[in-house]
Structure formats: C-alpha cells, structure tokens
Amino acid sequence: MTANEAVEKAIIEADNAKKYLGRIKSPQIKNKSDKDYLKTIVNSWFNSHRSAIASHITDQEALNKMDSKYKEILECTSRDSACATYKSKMKFIYSALVSIRGLTLTASPAVRSDDSPPDFTPIANPDTKLILVYRWEECARCLAGKANLASIVMIGGLLEALLLVKTSAYALDPTQAKKLYTAQCIPIDSNTGQKKKQSEWTLEIYISIAHELGWITHSVRSVAKLLQEYRNYVHVGKQISKPINLTNADSEICWGLVKAIARQLVV
Image (cartoon, rainbow, N blue to C red; front, side, top):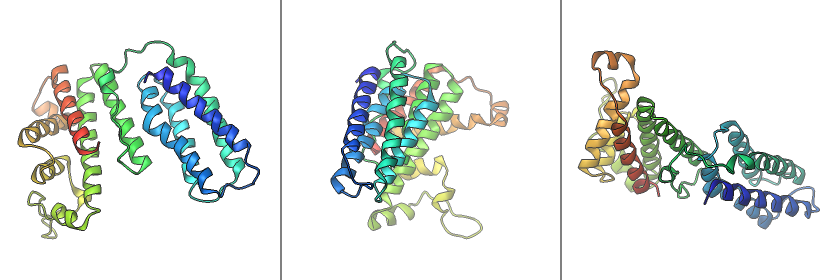
C-alpha cells in the first residue's frame, strides 16, 4: 500500500465514522457494537495506515497529534463516553488527514520499502506498538541519511525494545516465567546475592537470555553482541579510547539482523 492509498483509506474511514456517530441519537455511547466499530477504526490506523504514511512524510508532529486522538478514542471505548467527545476527536482526525494528503502525492526517497515496519498486531498494547513503529521508522531514517553512528545507536535501542517486549510476553506464562527469571546468564547482584532484577537488565543480558532460551541462534547472538559493542560508541570516552570508523556496511549488517529478529520474535 502506498502512502497516498493509506491516507485516502484513512480519510474514508474517518469520514464514515463521522457519519456513523452522527446517526447515534443517544448522548452516550453504551452499545458494544458501536464501541467495537470505533475500535476497528483505531486498529486500522495503527496496524495498517500509519506505517505507510509515516514512511513517506516527515511531519512527525502531525502524526503524533493524530496518534493521540486515535488513542483517546480507544480509551473512550473502555467506558460510556459522550457521543460528542467521539465526534470532536474524529473531526480533528479527519481534518488532519486531509491536511497531510498532499504530502503523500510526491515520491519520497526517505525510506526503502523493505524498511517499513512489520505488522506488530500480535502485540496487544497499542502504546507499545506505537513506540516500536516510531523507533523502527527512526532507524530507517538514520540509515537513509547514512548517519552510521546514529543508525547503530537507534538499532541497538530497537533490539533492546524488541527483547523487552518478548520477555514481558514470555513472563505472563508461569512456567515460562520461571525459565526466564532463573536463566543462568543473568548476573548476580553483588549487594543482594540474588540475580539482577529485570529493571537492571542491559542489552547484553537480554541478548544472552534470548540465546539461552533458544530465541536466537549462536551466530545471531554473535552479530548481536557486535551491535551491542558498536552501540557503546554513543559514549565519547569509548570512541576516544578505541577509535573506530563505523561504515554504512556496518549499519546495514546490524539493521538486517534486527529486522530478522523482529520478524522472528514478535510477528
């Protein structure tokens, strides 16, 4: 789907939603079918339209404002919110979509098609999905601009985010949680004598856990460790003590690794 096709579909959906809300006579929306319909509009934005549009335009502020309104609509469906509240938010979304439509008409070299975010539908939390999509797109923009150090720092952050999401989902199952939190590779805290808490895990620990639990192979772990090492060059002291020239090839290798891991772990 092109960016222009995505924004046109989003506009049609927003317009239909406005008309749908206009037919509701009750001051509050209590009917489950009405709420479910509005949820589909929100899910369609986050799971389909947004990534195609975001890969094409640079007005991140406009996207963030629409994201906020879509999320507010989703939050409203958890209670019997006023119909007028929905109408106001949908009116804003419709106007915002119309205003960015022209930006999608021209070709954009910013992001390659194979760098578009994957389908993060399996992740239930919409905020988490939004963060992953944003970080994914930021990585792609850094690569397109050949900002190699920035690319690798962002790619390393994305890898950590993906592994955090995976471990969080894994921990929901008591049996799997036991395997996770008793993994041999988790370092011992010198102060408590216990394994470090998840809030203290670094990218290095996440990579080791992913390997120990069989989520990634030994060869993938080796490249991930290299990414972890390169990511440390965000610290000036590291770059001064061990100078290195990070190239576009280095960025592409790390990016290819994380794209493969993302589709394996989450999708």
